[in-house]
Length: 536
Image (cartoon, rainbow, N blue to C red):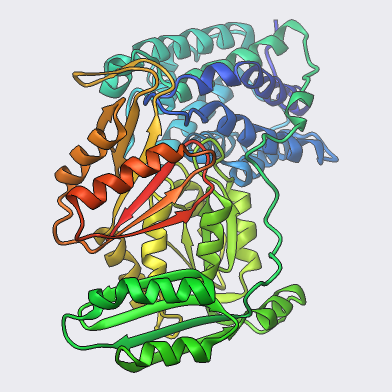
């Protein structure tokens, strides 16, 4: 029986916990609530623990304090997605609850550390949701009196695994989404496997095999290299036309800009026509636009010089910088063209870590930096990364989709002050209607609706609005529901290997029923979602 744990044994506990999670990663990933291919809780929790293990491996001295600090710091930097961030906060509380300068931990010490883990984890989440991994740590805290008198860690870990298992089993009774989908909570199950992994140490199994994680998943691509420039000048103009004629000029202007450049964005609002294009002939663009009206504002940047500036890492710091998470190459190119300084690859099934976002912020040489997470599972990691900076002002715009980010960037004015920019971004995000289309990867039930494998699922914002094997019918239902009568532009971003016939059906629907919307199609390159749609 083991009655005390020293630093060496504590390190083994964390490593075996990570191994236990690794063995069940795919099972945890499969426990996604919605029947869409976004099950990444197991991968996110594992990436979080793996970063902690990297910090453990760097230790020269394996004292209790050093081991706990390594896990606290490492998991914070490695935290991916909501599950990873919450797990990192559980471990932070666990570390902060340890007795100061302890050479060994006793069972009562360990129980008190679990109580502190509950306190910190719940305080880190603005709206704690029961039926999740939070419930597991709450159960352990509320029933801690049962464990305070245990004589050995063998008894304690048996108890921890049993309590965690109970919390996992009842999670569907606490969260309607789980009950409707017929699954237990993925994060709670992950915490159960962590404790189960720890328990194996007590039988003398101290060596953890963590080599399986060495290969990087296909979607976690390296940071994009800056592409060779076909067009040298990033050109932006605002033209005032006769009242009510901005929309009339829209198609002609888009067609002309596509002939003379790329990365075309055209926005009409009242009597203003705002354009963005990459071209080698900004003068010709202006000549064409002056046929429509008068120049209000002009901005031309030499991207070749900007590229050289980036490569040489010039010291001069600018006023405003932007970091954005992007799920695909096409979307990344558009974001760069709209002023994004650093792209972080991420999205469904590939949530970047807190460290990834922090690194991108550090590379953005600016006094004020806006961060667009563009996925609900990445917002917490972005907010955690932002807290690490004192000398620069990091502002997280809590976007749930890339579409919200792109809409905000169209209205970006780098000459405005940070407060004005923040207000513009937040107001724009409220106005845009982001729609995401994917396919169900399994049968499921949501509310009273039975979802069948292979059906199209259409989300507006974060809500599932329609499902059908007929994409045209389902999208029509959604567009009617979200009320697009007063909107002007619909932008479609195609994903990897999107079905051409589905795109044609979407085009037909817009032409037949929503011809007041100007339609633009862009190559997005995002995985899992054949179509992302933005309506403004």
